[in-house]
Image 1: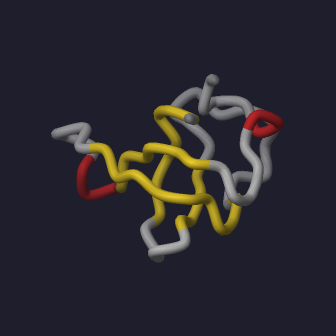
Image 2: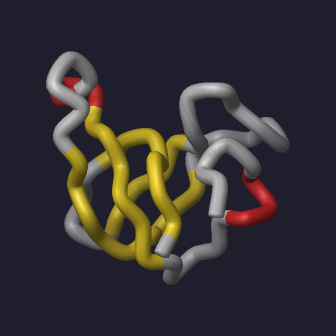
Image 3: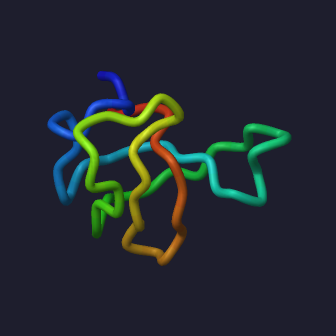
Length: 63
C-alpha cells in the first residue's frame, strides 16, 4: 500500500519509515504505528508517524 495517503495508515499497522536523520541514506526502520502525526489527507514524502519504539519518520512501505 501507499504510505502517502493517510486513510491507508491505521494505528497498529506494520510499516517501514525513514527517520529524519536517515533521509540521505534512506535507511528504513520497521515497526508498529502508535500515533499518526500528519493531519493532511496526503503528503508527497509519506505520512509522518510515531512508532511504538518512539521512532518518528515518514512511511515508505505498509505491510
